[in-house]
Image 1 (cartoon, one colour):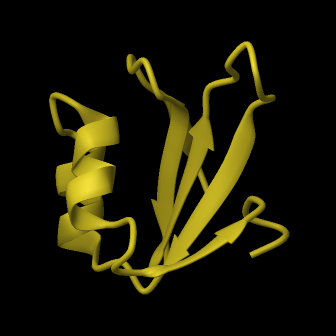
Image 2 (cartoon, rainbow, N blue to C red; image 1 turned 90 degrees about the vertical axis):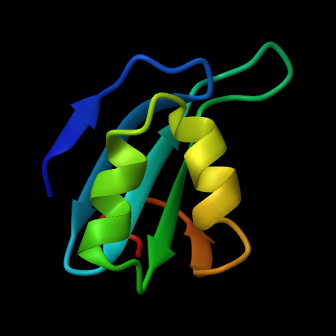
Length: 77
């Protein structure tokens, strides 16, 4: 899976392949960076999220709580 770096206050990198949307969240003072994998995400939705003006907001509104979620990247998903 190719990950691309994005300009976002919440997201560092994002990638999509075979129904899996992988998000690398930026580190904060109180927590380290972490990786989330969302499965079952349609390709059209993944493209919309990846190209949204606010990727974090698009994830909250369209992906989180809707698609199966786990921590870990491509190898752990």
